[in-house]
Length: 459
Image (cartoon, rainbow, N blue to C red; front, top):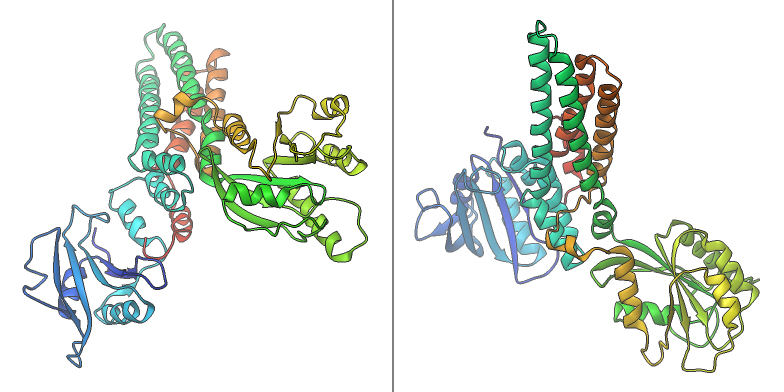
């Protein structure tokens, strides 16, 4: 199906060595050719070749840019349309002048994600693969990138399609039963078959969902709050994990007055670190606001790093922090172990209540490697799974898989209770439809538009 021709800048805004203006559609090659001056016409060159030349304003004849132009003819392109990429010098003025001339050639500006949307609509990729493109762009660790690449290659799609094929076999068996009611044992046999096959599908959906926790962490990052009393080493820990001096470190209590956020890769786990203001009773108005924000960050955290001062006895503020963390996954960090210990071992053991305790001296850079290992083991357990990298990580996919699991469970319950097979069929068909929404086989246009609108321009 041919759409109109679109164009956009596909490289980040700003100064750089190269910027790329991408065109896709039936007029991509003729439009670029009208601006290009080189050894050969772009309409006559071979596909998947790159050509040196100049971009010339057709009205004035003035040279605008020195460029390299890639020509890729359908269907072997990302969008399955003719695609041209104009490589010009990186810089706002340069790339905007080229784009402006391109848009004068019966070409319109692409909408966010429209190139990827066309790849989906033209059958180049399915919906889950299209969504994985943005996951690849936003990946914050090598492992997250591997998961995204796995989904782009269609591994999750393959699992979903196999499940849908099994469900189709079940629906076909029901149709046979309905079409040939004269066989008395047909319904009994079909009911038993439905129960067995539906149970296998349910087990496979559970297997995919078992990767959801790790997959979502890899995709979105783990919201991690660093908490503790003032001057206990929170900012030092943030700086160590980030490997930069992002936070001000002094021996003056209350230096951090606001919440500082930073992404960091810890043992393959992307953490969204939140360095909070020290939580304590205070009359300082500014510090009090910081404490309130820290408490809000604490409530939304997936992981809490609670720092204690090894050189001081536990205080009421320390005990209050233990009450505040509730059931949130927490690692206790006993810092300043280079100094004499004044923490009661018995009281600490009672408060810790089985949570992991790491002893560190951030001043001497001791104990932090063990901390990183504990974080990785807590949230990415099961190293064997990492070899396949077939995780479900997208929130939409996880929600649909849970709906599909509920629908197939209803089918199993109905078959087990001896309901007529055409009643069981309703839930089987519902499961098939829900799984189809993951890969885009059964999804409405409004959802497609919403999903692709979240993409960056030029992708």
